[in-house]
Amino acid sequence: MTAYGREDLLRAASAGIRAPSLHNTQPWLFRLRDGGIEILADPARRLTAADRAGWAVRISCGAATYNARLALAAAGTPAEVALRPDRQEPDLIARLTPGITRFPTYTEDELFRAIPHRYSNRAPFWPNPVPAEDRVRLLEAARLEGAWLELLVGMTALSGFAEIAQSADRVLRRDVGYQSELIGWTHADAAPDGVPVTAGAPAAESHDLLPQRSFSDRRRAPGHDYEPEPLVGILGAAGDTQVDQIVAGQALQKVLLTATAAGLATSMISQPIEVPTARDQLRRSLRQTGIPQMALRIGYGSPGHPSRRRALSEVLPDER
Ligand SMILES: Cc1cc2nc3c(=O)[nH]c(=O)nc-3n(C[C@H](O)[C@H](O)[C@H](O)COP(=O)(O)O)c2cc1C
Image (cartoon, rainbow, N blue to C red; front, side, top):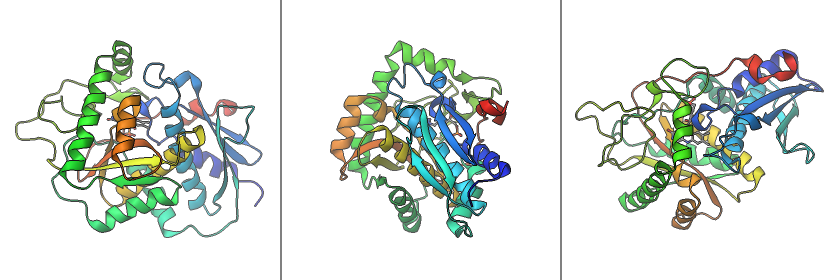
């Protein structure tokens, strides 16, 4: 095949916009070019306080790229993927062109079908442990995308992570610019971007192990505390170049969808990645070589809601 059909490309973009992004900024654009699709960072949607270097934009666009790849693979022609293919165009994250036509694998189908069901669940999870076979699938998902996932085992590792994450959270809470940006992206109504207060965690309590972003001051019902021993995974890449961050974003999305397909809920905790000293402490606490790019909480949750996305026409500027 030399060119994808327009319908397949639009389906890829529709899958792309379901990716997660910091504060649901949706910092991506799509361009249909020469029978392929390009994923671009939208610099106007980079968070100026929380994301000075563009790390979160690249993680989010990497995740959108992975969703678009899944849609193309599920339609029967997996993409050839070129990351940052043009030095002259720094916002160009990935170019997807038609590869060899074949039937989708079971996993591609399963993960593609999981896209609309994945969302961030910041509520307390049930205390049930995540089975070993699901843990192995999560580790494999990251590895097959060129990244790594380390699942923290035992209370010592978990407490060490919690301490780093809480201290990073305190740094960010003291940052007035960061907090006002966060408030600006939190919405009480059904806006097409930003985080709806209904998707937030209950207000933090002093005995909480991990810092969950609450996006509201809603109190939790008595007895509805967080799971005492959450499963936390740290996802990382070989390094911290722009391409490493895009690779990490794709792997993140594969891990999240693998969890969704296994009936698991997830939420992200990026404070210890956003604060450089915390990220370095976290790096030194792990058994991996490379750089942590995201922390995740994984478990069994009560149903929540996917948050909204802007219309496809908003992210396809050439097609307007
Ligand atoms: C780079 C990045 C960092 C994120 N950090 C956090 C975080 O620290 N806390 C949190 O609750 N959600 C975090 N999220 C999740 C986003 O808030 C979420 O993806 C967005 O609001 C869209 O909602 P959805 O995941 O339910 O589709 C992060 C997502 C990305 C891509």
